Image (cartoon, rainbow, N blue to C red; front, side):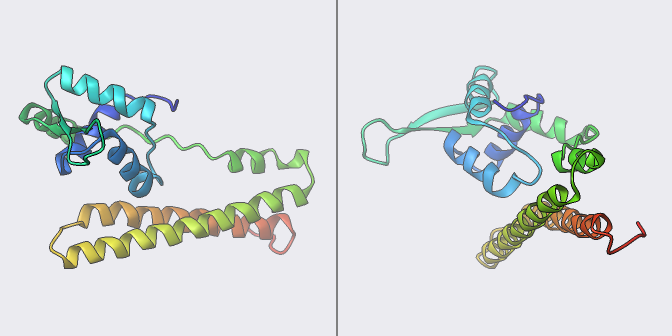
Length: 187
């Protein structure tokens, strides 16, 4: 289970403020749109949904439209939930905490052969290039939704953040490779 930052409540309320959803659709949306800056596990989402219902911040109902036995449980935000979400949105965000194992490995690089780090950096560059493509794909998807009348400005801004973050990390890794391999002396 991922570390519980206490923000799961607000993530789920924010998702429900967009539209009624199941725990599964919330998880998939987070994986697709927010993966570059936020993670939530099913082990965080479902207990949070139950707690929100118990606190009167959300309601649940069974959607039996699937026609396959037991229906899905769909959750919807209440007026009280919208107020809690708004109060949280108005508070100043906490300072972000980043964790990049690649940076630790580079920091301790004098304890291994340069080829080991160069291999790690190659993988990191490829991973970031793929993530940049993913984020640009989300931006294009949001453009299509905009053309259909759905305002996705704020979602596009978070995807754009991913493009910038992954581009910066890729560019750093290229520079680090050049320094480690002796192609550049200057930082």
